[in-house]
Length: 240
Image 1 (tube, rainbow, N blue to C red):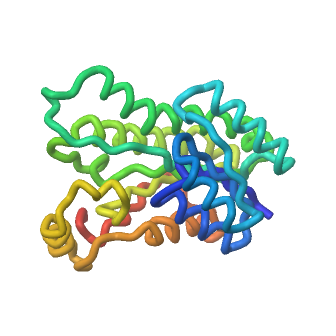
Image 2: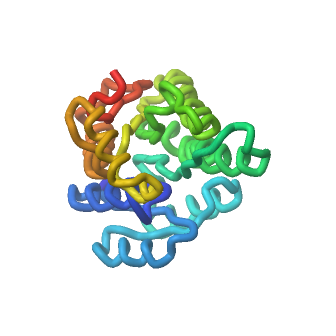
């Protein structure tokens, strides 16, 4: 059985990815940091899901987590899904260095640290898949989401460059750029706002965590073995 490590897996998109991969017969290492109750609920759904607490923006936490995963499962992750992330809205003139560090540490530094932690074994085995979760705002930029957009754009650049670097070692690196997905991140929007966003989407609905999970499953499968360095927009046509 293949082992997938999913960061930020206790809620939302990450939890749905964990559940779907488990359904499809994968072993799942589900990372969480603060959402203990949600992580416990997730791990209780299947004996093939094991949760691991770590702040993936801290190098020592990441390294300890990978060691624990190897000890528990007896192997390095075959697939890494860098999903951990936070959103932030506000005028750039109201942002400060603390907000900048928090966003970039969570959304970008974690991708670097986790990828670096699993790559040595992947390279030696000449196989592996890394899937990064960005955002359509990383592709086009969002007003009042400058730092968030910049961090997600960095994930896209990281994906493309890393795909070129580790491709000769048989490793695929791809990125999913979700559109507007119905998760807790939309809690600040009114029903009227969500209706407008849905109406502006050519497929006339908002995305679901399952939409992203199914795309991740495809990129993790053998069906995508000749796909690397790509940014897959899952946005219902909102951005074309």
